[in-house]
Length: 69
Image 1: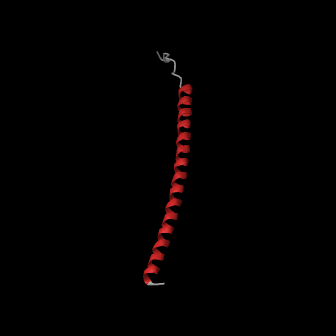
Image 2: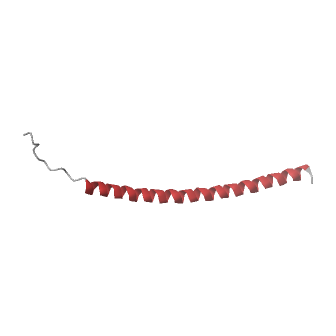
Image 3: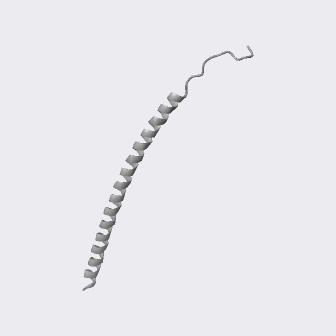
């Protein structure tokens, strides 16, 4: 092999490796987005439950005169 062929082979190997790494990272990013969507959905549900519980448990206190009046 000549020097040019060796350089070309090295460049092709590097490009192939980088393409594989990019594909792996893209898949990991897609997986992370799925997880983020699941977390957002759960957070929305929990927030709704919390607000519902807060509304039902906090009744307005009745207005009465204190005993010292």
